[in-house]
Image (cartoon, rainbow, N blue to C red; front, side):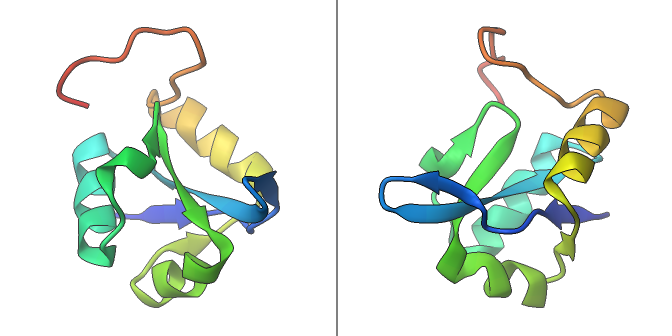
Length: 92
């Protein structure tokens, strides 16, 4: 069971953001995010958006730091990548 996080380099809403992903399942990702207290509304297609001030919390909880390029590679390799425009199942 591994959850990954990239550096908080993605700008939005006046903040920098990281992407939190799993290479195993969405269930694993949702469970990890819930333990961190991250609201489900932060889930977007195949990842959670995490503000920079929560990055260290995720790492302390066991998320593995990887590059943003590696996040994309891991999502593709696991079959969990959901590009924009693709319909998301109700139970995701």
